[in-house]
Structure formats: structure tokens, C-alpha cells
Image (cartoon, rainbow, N blue to C red; front, side, top):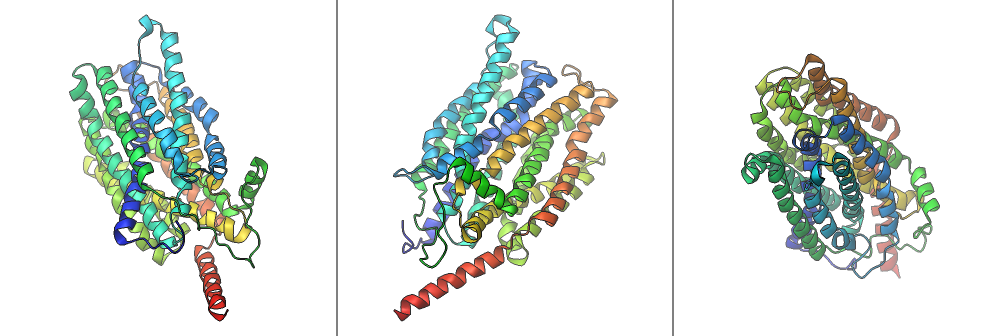
Length: 465
């Protein structure tokens, strides 16, 4: 699809919807994994928190950088469907099937070793395939449009769809498990996993069928330095390291995902044991729908401040929300959660825009075209974040003497839960603020202005010929 093709308003909204549907698909299971998998393994299947936390960490280390591998493969993919788009077809179905298997845990005749081996194998395969389906979501963004404002709209649409899916999952998962399984929670989770897996397959295949990559995103200016593409692994990584804004953003994204995973995994513990209100878990997690307000604020905020400052504002606001939740009051708990979730909605939306900014910076300033590698940041961050987050959550629970069968936990366990849910996320959010303030120097306005000036110059040259 060439530059001469102008999309109608209806086509723009269609593209936004199906681009958002890709991340909704991935986040249906990612949110269940983040919100409930630790709880499911420890309280339903009966696995020790230390084993589960270690499993999460080891698998994250094993596949932490598979996003980079997939990014490299995307950069070197040349199919009739495009570079990133075919991965929705190739990995959507396997991801749906592995989602179903994630909550299918046979007892193997009471052989605990076999059961642990099965859980470890399925979780590892799920993680590897998840990267293959989700890395192209960010990689395809720079190829959907060259308009920076439309990229912001697409990123916001992505997060709106994601948060709608997340809100539904957070609110109805436990009630659906109870309804589907009755008193048999393991059966309920297995049936619910089948529903989620099927939905993932439908969403990915629908997005594959309706999205189209544009083939003219990289400017072809005879007077400009040659843009390097089709790089070797060594050249790709070397080019990425030269991109200083990308390095700062990568570290920040890992920290962002780490504290978000810690918070998600311990929310159910916080309400169940600190507040002793397990009945509020669904409503509390369902509030994630308010993150849509944060998503929708990004196009406006990005017009009045730099993208970096939108992220910094989001982190500070998130910290305020977390502090409010530290007071033991149900109204303050929900009010603080709303503030924190709106802030995170804005944070994730602007983060994906900032990644696209670093891709454009690489093309315009470094003359290197590697959107796959650079766009692998969210997947690497998500994997490392879940690894570190799962490790910290599991180990803190073990350190606190958490007992899965006890309805009332000891003071040390409650301290571990509160630390994981409130204070660690605040510390890591403030660390992100410092990193971006000191090291993220990319000025998207200068890049956009320079690009517009070059296009205007080219237009004048053509008119004078």
C-alpha cells in the first residue's frame, strides 16, 4: 500500500480497532497469568510459593530475550503478508492452545514430580509462544502509518482495547470459575482456560485478516544517507545500543513491568488477607477499566508536553495512588486504585509511542532501520518483569511464612504482602522517573519538524523540476 493511498475515517477506525484487538488477545491470558496464576498454583493446585516464584523467574531468564530473537526474525521476514503481520497467523493458534493447557493439570496418579514437570513444561512453552504472538504488535506500529499523531491514536486504541479486556477478565474470572466449577475450583479454571484460549485465537486471526502494513514508511531520499536494513545480529544489537533514548526506555520498561507484575500478583493476597475481603477482589480488579481514561488522555497530553514528561507525570501520579491505598480504608483503597490505574493507562500508552519514537530516531538520526529489534522492548520488559516480579512476590511470601491453607496470616506475612503491593511499586516507579529525567534526551518535536521540513523541501524540488 503506497503513500498515495489515503485512508478514510472508517478505515482509520477499523485499523485502530483491529490493532487494539491484537493486544487485547494477548492480555486476556497475560492478565490472568499476572493476576491469578500464582494464586491458582499455590491455593488450587497446592504448589509451594517458593517453587512457583522460582519457576516464574527461571522461565523468564530462559525466554527473556526471545523477544529480541523474534524482533530479529521480523526484521528479516519478507512474505506476501508483510514483516510483522504474519506472526499473528503463525502464533495466534498455538498461543490459544497453550492457554488451555496452562490450566489443565493432571495429577499423574499423585506423582508430584510429574505434575511439577508438566507445569514447568507448559508454562515454558506458553512463554516462548507468547513472545512470538506479541512482539509483532509493537513492531508493526511504525509500519501502519507514518503520521506521528495517528501512531499516538493507534497506541491509545491499543491500550483502550487492552484495558477493556483486562477489566472484563479481572471482574469476571473468579465468578466464572466458581460458576463453571462449582465447588471444584480446578475444574472451573480448566473450563475458563478453554474459553480464554478460544477467544485469543479468534482475536489474533481477525486482526491478521484486517490489518495491512504500508510499504513506504521509510523515506526514500536520494540526498539522505543510506538507511541500513537487513542487519546481522551483531549489527542489530550494536545499532540498538547506539540508540541512547532506546536504552534508557528499555531499562525503564523492565522496571515498569516488574512493579506492575508484583502489584498484580499480590492484589488478590492484599484484599484476601490484609483486608480480609476476598469478596472485593473481582470489583477491585474490574476497576482496571478506568485505565481507559488514562489511555484517552495521552493524545491530549502529548500535544502539551513531551512524551517523556507524560511518562514521568504518570509515574508520580501512580505513586500518589499507591500511598493512598496504604491507609486501611476501603473507600481510600478503591480511590487510590482508580488514581493508580488511570496513571498506568497513560504510562503504557505513552510507552508504546516512545518506542515508535526511538524507531524513528534510529531511522532519521542513526540511519538504521530495525523496527523489530527496537520494538522487542515491551516483550523483553514483560518477560523480565514477570520473572523478577514473580520471584520477588514468591520469595517475599515464603519469607513472611505465608500458609496457603490458613485463612488468617501472621504479621510477618501481612508485612510481606503489603510491601509487595504498595511500597516496592512506588520505589521502582520513582527509579523510572530518575532514569528518564537524566538519560532520555530524545526530542520527538525536533525529529518531526526535521522530517516535515525534508518532505516540504522534496515537494518544492519536485514542483521546480
